Amino acid sequence: MFGEAVMGLIYAEIRLANPKNSALKPLAVKALVDTGAVTICIPRRIASKLQLAEIEKRRIRTADGKLHSVPYVGPVQVNFKNRTSFTGALVLGRFVLMGAVPMEDMDLVLSPSGQTVTVNPKSPDIPEAIVM
Image (tube, rainbow, N blue to C red; front, top):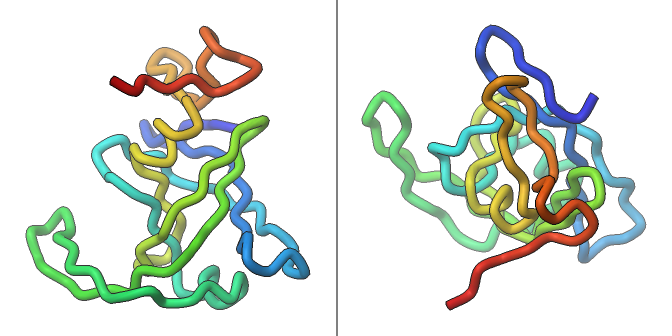
């Protein structure tokens, strides 16, 4: 299943890869989908497995209001069904969190009634974007 809900939370099965090292196999992971988050967050163990280079430190504010300095790594290739996004990732937490930027880049939508993630039904074959 590519998107599922657990206690009101929406998860999606995605693949993460290091596009700079094709010898490494992509990792299939379950990501918590959070449209209130901007980018993708990955645990240190996933950054290590994918051998993602630290680009810089980023200051982030967590939901509890606290500031933290965390590694920003990349590039990361994110795949969902027939969609791909390239981005950087914040290294923190114990699980993968996918925010709004990769979701918009891949033209994904949330189905509140089904609590699932899917490709945009208005553009099932190729992602669409608005650029004005």
